[in-house]
Image (tube, rainbow, N blue to C red; front, side, top):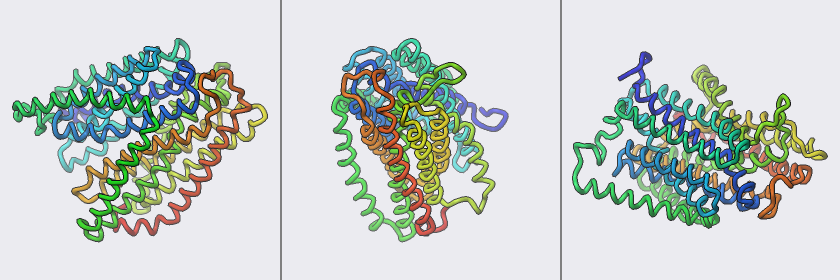
Length: 489
């Protein structure tokens, strides 16, 4: 079944399911740092550590969720399992208990692993190989992500600030349930494609398949327990990355020498190099939910037309800018044609603009150091540069992996890309800890803005210098690096 513009109708079911899931995630993310510092009276350092570990694991688990869907559950069942776990996690967050809080985060981590990778896979399954509508379909789907991400901080942030943080989480849970209901209601429009050929396709059903499905559900319980342990001891997440990254990198380097022809080897090295560069971008960019969020709360003048806007609402600025500028950037790349910047150059441009965003934030803090109240324009300008930087790097990164990876390594390299983002989330938490300004048990409202403004401003200045340097070096080396792509742009 297709709409008048030629897209499968299942696309719009998936659009709204993803929109509600992103509403749930970004609504929760906007509140999380405030919930820890204001409800549980966690100190800044502990809050940043937990936040970094949580977001790192959220980006790590889809690697495993995709494999399980491929080999056992199928994509449709995986999305349903993920939705149920995440809805339960959001509602558990509303219970003001530290042990329940860590358990709720664990449900969200595991649930996201089942949901995130597989709903995108179903979108791809709607189109036949070589179908020219596929890119446009993913563009429509991507807009759903940003509609949800833009609405969530405004709605959940206002509810949380006005009626209590717990009610913001309840609203995020309601959003997740809405996404699941929409998915179940519309599954007839994609069910055949989402299950076809999979282990639990009705044509393939057998006792061994069912037993593997049961084993997955038992594994979910174990995974939630493991995630809960990591949330209680978040510093161990760093060791998890260390012990997983070293053998993966060693394998890829060995593979490039033993299995690849020179052209394929060079392309793989370029993909690995730019993936490493992207860690800098994401580690700096992802200050948004942690140090930037508390900076907004403690040091930004948020009065607009006589009303004080809740700090969590400003988490909507980035996705709203994406909705505005995303189509313009897409049109720009098409219009440039053969003059379109190369992949390494776009990476450099993205990191350079990220640095300019931190220049704006640092300058806003510096000129406000005597009174501690930063004009709102500097925050918005910072987010604007961060967004244009994201539009240069993020969509290009996924495309780069599919273009430069050896054919038999594309899936693993996509996993490496997400693993690098996951690691960057953990590093982002470590960087945010540099802005810790209160001892554990301190109330955020008692913090002197004059004392904190350059604590944040100092970090933003350092991030600006590093990002500008890395961006400039990447752009200078872009012609050399691009030679390794052997003509792929």
